[in-house]
Length: 512
Image 1 (cartoon, rainbow, N blue to C red):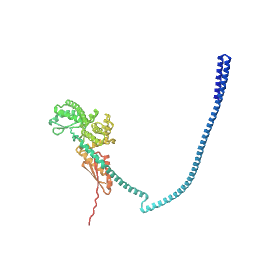
Image 2 (cartoon, one colour):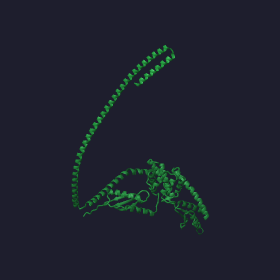
Image 3 (cartoon, one colour):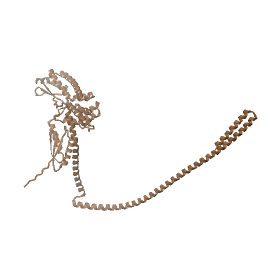
């Protein structure tokens, strides 16, 4: 409203100003009178407009006050309704809690009564139990501790029976499909493997054209033979065998260099310390080149690529290494092919299996120079020369020095066993053979309930005769399982060993 009044005043001042300007500009009395008349009219109109605006502002202010009063009353009414609702709910909850508290007090009282009754019944039961135990001990003639011991013994016997039964059922179920499938895969791999691998007996024997050559090899006061043995590091054995000398040494490479050196000296006929040194150096260089050629041809033959020169050199050295009469390089080639073929049958990586199979016995090329097993030496050498972790793991795990973690590692170990255990692949001394059979029989006899044990089929099977009154049919299966586990953990053997437990009960009577 004040705004409208101020507006009216300003309009009046403005009109007065206009009037004053018109009078000033006219300069005559008539114009001044007309201007005053117009100014008075303008002022009157301005005052009338100001009154109208003031009344209109008052009306709008009253309407706004009425609207605000109604909104405030509605808000207060809504708050009172919510407060009444909350008070009602709180009263209902309080009544409900009072009721629950009363019920809990009643229940607590009932539970206390029941607890007293149960304690009384427990005391009565304990008394009755003690009386019954005393009666049972008098009737049975056993104390409570003796009865527990007898019960545990019976329970242990029953558990052993059930465990043996469960082991037999599990083994039967597992071997129904697994054994058949494994045999199919191994048989297929062996049939498809066409490696020409025969048993080699590495005898370092050099033939002579005549016995007079032996004297020339010995030389004056033995200087030739001493020079030869000092240069080659191999013993030259000259005995009564006609037209033959023997080279003896643990290092197969040195032995081969010595053999070639001696053969060239015998063919040349000139034998003296200087000539021996010249021929030895030449044969050593020639053998180094031959070893690299053999390693490269082997890698190409097996289709194993990106091998370092150091690994290729060791592969070539394996050509002159034997294990139980089996050439190690040929054995490695056979293992590579078998592992690759089995990997193809199983749908895993055949190239990885072939590579690991070829390198699995790499350590045998250096095991006579360094300390450690050939598996650990081979794995260490392969790792230093850039082979990946899977190949290194397979090399280390093929004799279970590390538990196999990949299928390829298991296939390499299996292929190694197949190649080594097939008939005619390896040979061993009679003493070692007999000792292995004796250890196998003694291990089987060490179990309780075993009467006799016989190792048959060159130690590939052991037949165990058990006492029928101690070992029943179910426990016989568990006994075979235990013997197998002990053989695996304590004995070293090529291939596999089959354990057969035989239980026989004979009943006789005589008619009179």
